[in-house]
Image (cartoon, rainbow, N blue to C red):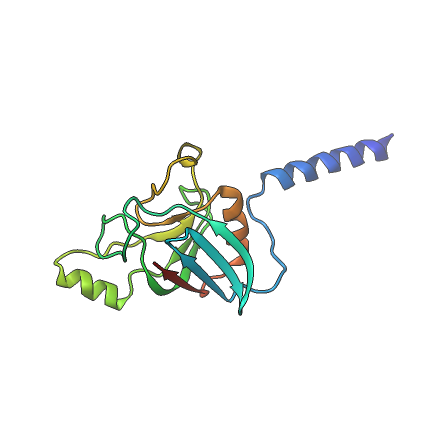
Length: 163
């Protein structure tokens, strides 16, 4: 009787932990780059030339073109890298994109503006799940997808964002 109760308790604890843990473990081939095709609304996690995962996403409220200045609602285009992970994001989980780089800062300075920043790949709140292109310039995926991306993509991974 005691062994059965311990087994049942252990099984219940395992099930609860498995359901509530947003931090997944990934043991597959490393993600060597992330490719974002804004126009197609598709993101690819690659190991060299092999596509490991593909995700659909939403963008900023003014998605066409390269991010120029703070508040323009655009998502950057070009070569960057993943520069941080945020387990306490307001948008479930997030990984940071290294925008702005030196060229982005110089371009914004020429316009007399700030380039903005805090561009992330992040989850999607329930109230935004049916809204198209709602972010301030970030890339939004479903929370469950963000769990996989967070586990698979390491800080330092190159990310290439195309129109």
